[in-house]
View 1: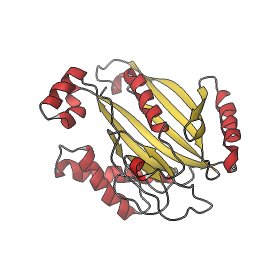
View 2: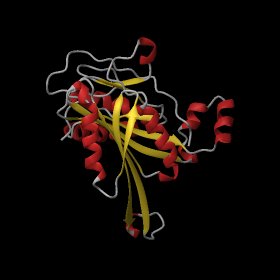
View 3: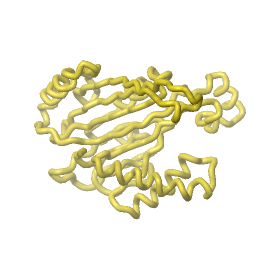
Length: 269
C-alpha cells in the first residue's frame, strides 16, 4: 500500500464555542483521504458535494459527477444528523513499490497513487465529539472510565494511550461477516473480515471527548492502516498550532470553513 503524505487542506477556527459545542480540535489527515461534504445547510452541502465528486472521480466527467453529487449530499446530511463532525473516505493504491517508482520517474506519481487497476485499499474515517462531564485537569479520570467500560466487552482490545495532546483510549475490534452467494463475485458463500480502530480522546479545553474511528474491510493492509491512524493521533491538538505547523491540519471548530475542511462539531447522537 502506498505510504501517504500529509494533506495540504487548512481549516482555521473562528468564533467562540457555546456551552453546547466543543472547542476547536486540530488534526492532520494524510493525502489519500477525501473529506465528505458535511455542512450545516442544504445549499452548502450541495456546493461541497459538487467539489467532492470532482476530486474523488478526478478522471470522470459530468456524466459521472452530476448523478453522484446528490448521493454524497444525502450521505453528508445523514452523517451530520448523527453528530459526526468530520468524515472522509481513504483510498490508497496497493501497487508494489517498483511500479510506484517507475510511475514517479515518468512524471505520473499522483496518477499511480490512486490507480485502481493495480488495486485499492479503502477505509472510512470519522471524527465526532460527545459530551463528557470533566474539568480541564480531569482528562485522566475520564480516560480511565472509558477504558474500564470498553474493557468489559471480551471482544474489545481496549488499551490506554499517552498522546502528545493527553491521555486517550483505543479500542480495536475485528468482525467476520458471512456473505451469501447472491452478493459474491464467485457465486459461492464466503467470509468478509472487517477491522475497526476507535480512539477516545478527552478534550483538555472543555467537557467533551473526541472519538476518532477508522473502519476498513481491506484487512490485508491492517498494519498500514494502524500506522495511518497512529500518525493522525500524534497530530491531535487542543491548542492552535503555530503557523509553520498549521499546513496540513484539519480542525473541528465553530464558523465557516473553506472547501476540504470539516464541519462545525456537535455532540454525537
